[in-house]
Length: 397
Image (cartoon, rainbow, N blue to C red; front, side, top):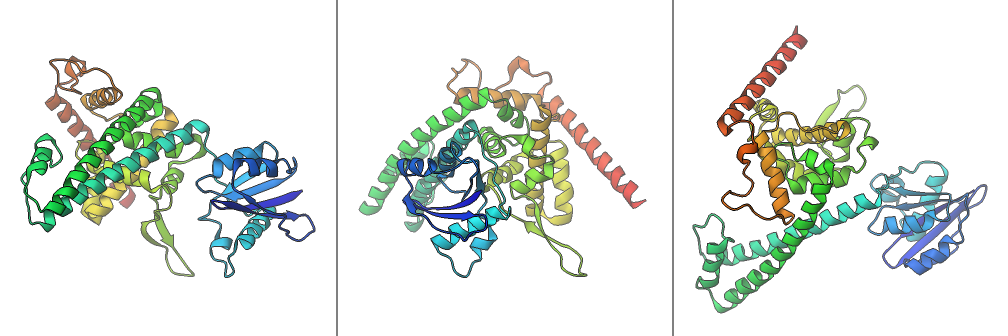
């Protein structure tokens, strides 16, 4: 049996082969192209084990190799410490180290997402890229106004009235060119962003998991689909704490010798985009009466606002695990909010608007008037507070 390590780069791949009872040897360095990889894959045996680190082009390479090798393992580069901390670090050394770790069964494998999950992740990454471009262009315009000491009173500078003002505000010639250029680019990026959002919305309407997560207050379309894409198959997380750790929302723990364990800040290891979206969703979730609002208030009183927001984001990850595992909606979501969210997704997916009714209103489909609905949620919040207080009292006793 052979253990084969691949150190994959953009233009070439270094190969190291370790056979039982022999030294590591490097048969060749091949180009990282489909044709070259197919030729290499045909040389593999059904008993071979191949390892490569996760990177941009990992999954297409792994699929090519699986057709011929007995086992293909994708390792987590953050956990392959022998390579990251090596004093001598070259492509040949890295590939040889991978082969040796594989032979010793010391490789921490990465879960391989199915094609649908990979497509959803690519879709989310594209949407994120467009949002970042939109933010950079808006910041560029704000910078021009700031260095020319120009203020404004618009609530939304990039609304219809604000853009008209930006086209007419007096500026030096070069600054005017920059603002006009940024506005043209912004229009193009926003058009692409609308198309990307439409594709995400259409996908959400066909994916029950995303719609389940949207029943949580504060969780919108993009957050729900991003978390769905990161989780993939929820059964790979036997407990909610494992999902929390996967998203990097678990605290770091340090302990040595006789000293007590010290709990620090969150680990931040995992998908940063989904983690940031959950933190952003937490800011909205705490505005809705209910258990999440009560939980935030309780943590804020002890630890402060920032830690409380991150704690709510962690709670949202735990809720996501339970909703997906048990295939159910969030119990304490306001009915009108659930109806409104679904209608907004339908509109973003291209559904026609209804005349004479604001977009997203629940109309006669909501079982309770808005004020009665909020009063019901306040009662739920009070019940949650009483339950937590009684539980803490029992522990002290």
